[in-house]
Length: 386
Ligand SMILES: Nc1ncnc2c1ncn2[C@@H]1O[C@H](COP(=O)(O)OP(=O)(O)O)[C@@H](O)[C@H]1O
Ligand SMILES: O=C(CO)[C@H](O)[C@H](O)COP(=O)(O)O
Image (cartoon, protein in one colour):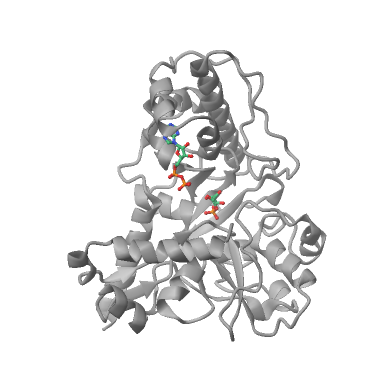
């Protein structure tokens, strides 16, 4: 699969999908992308120097070296971190690396629109080692031979520039359409849910399960895949598990999920104990690249099977929130849910029972809504600075 080409094609399909009458009033654009999805391109040819490294891919070959330069338990000390991907590429790429630039998925897509190479935001840059508290790359990273690949970093929702002329004239976007820095997908989902108080958490039930808790305290422990993103003057503590909707989609269609869920009694505990993964490897609440999926025994009844899977995913979520508490984050008061799994009311009831917390569906469940809020921030700041 040529991921890079497919993301580019999708971006241009989306630009073309906006009704013509609305395009001329688009003030700004920001994009969220999967965190730690990494692309390395050549700044001269503007072509990728390798295939894309996907968010959940592990580069264990780079881990010993990364662990030897980074502080203990730092978020880069996980095989799937952006820094491990960079080091793995650096050590295996045979040709000149002088003009190489590292971009995250969202940075790369935004670059196609604004054309200024090497710009990121402090959320996407966290897993390559950017320190959002100091607002800089740390000295232990800057002293590495590959540090020239690191992108410059802005706050999420900051104006980078205007849409490139050829693109805006091709699609009919206005001359002053701003392109702003974005964020990661699960932070965008958090922003979309509009949770603003410490103690509020958002679980994104998309292809994967990502949890984010607004906390006054920063917590980080790579042994369990726990890290803190900066959100203005607070912290978004959490992690992302490889369990989630991708496993469900492999077994059931969305229609089947809806029909089967209707028959589940969410107040009854399922005796089935699974660890639903699509492939070998887990990131959080246990960082174990060798963890095997567990989806057996499969009962005859699909309703019972789905009940067991949904409840097992809820147990992983509960373990995740308990871990954040044990590591010292602000205690969770309420869990808001976004992503494709958030529409499942039976699952919400199961999760309330397993988590022992109030759980509700976000009013806006699409991460893209959070990216649009960042674009609006960039446009407002630009208007006041003019
Ligand atoms: N009724 C449902 N109950 C549980 N999960 C569902 C339901 N309908 C869809 N899903 C899951 O939602 C996921 C898609 O959610 P989405 O947020 O679009 O994912 P992504 O992370 O890929 O953007 C699918 O993997 C699908 O299995
Ligand atoms: O698995 C994911 C990709 O869909 C998660 O959304 C992602 O890894 C979460 O990362 P972050 O906390 O940095 O946003």
